[in-house]
Length: 429
Image (spheres, helix red, strand yellow):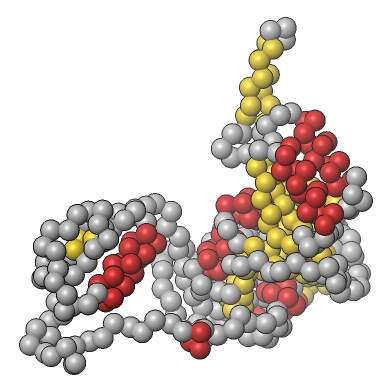
């Protein structure tokens, strides 16, 4: 269901357009995976094109224009770059178009190339808790926005309409960090984000655990007995299933993209027979009333979020750390036992293990002359363990894991969230 955005909320990042707005406005980004070929450039990607241009410019500017030039340099000679003369006799050799109106100007007044960046031009990396731009999935009032505020107080939260857009926002420097959920104590893992962790090259730099307090929201004047539909994120619907059966047994459940988006949709469309499961903050933002407070089936409802950045952090051993890895193997289930044993022998606790189908090789065929052909699924395994990569035990364990597996990648080694939390109070029905 597509939400109709109200004027009260900041619109989320979308993949439909691509622009760089001022910091105070929501940003929009898109992703392009296909290769684009640029003429007279080395490689087929934009990065290769920019690199070849930089090399070409530096070669031209470094030449002494007073020295004679070989009229026909070879392609592999030091005086040629990308097959062009390093000091051309005219702009046609490099297909350079002169700037209009500068033909008769002296060299002193011609536009000068930009100065190289120096160390004084580069700002230091933002420290934890400073004014960062943090991407999250959803609209204002979502639990992910609250998690971003807990992870980075006083940050500038940037809403995104999809999980993948939040990844792209960090990759394209629209945001400095992303805070995304990976598991809930009642609903389990958010598999989409596990797949995206493998697809994108971001690093986990921290985690934050957020107690979730669900409310049933509706327009002012709405009554429980007249509700025909309850909408929310699938995880929220699952976390409130038994309570909803008691509150509104005849109301149908319908899944939407996020909790706060459900509240926004009801307010924008004036739906008086529909309620949303969302936070109390969402009720304030979109002018809804709280029909029931604390409707989660279990008071110990906690969602774990990970903090993502373009660069990893340096692991330490002066505080509790957690490390996340993903690996694959192609030699049967005995290899998985060996991998887990590498941690057990070193007394390293595993906090989570998650298996996801291998996208490139989802099925493996095993031939046996006696029983015929069997089909087995290939998996990627995600493992979290309580140790820092600065710990020698963890380094030796990963060394063993690398011998047993066909693929291994460290997603991040980061501080554990040790902040205490209290269960949400029971619902006031």
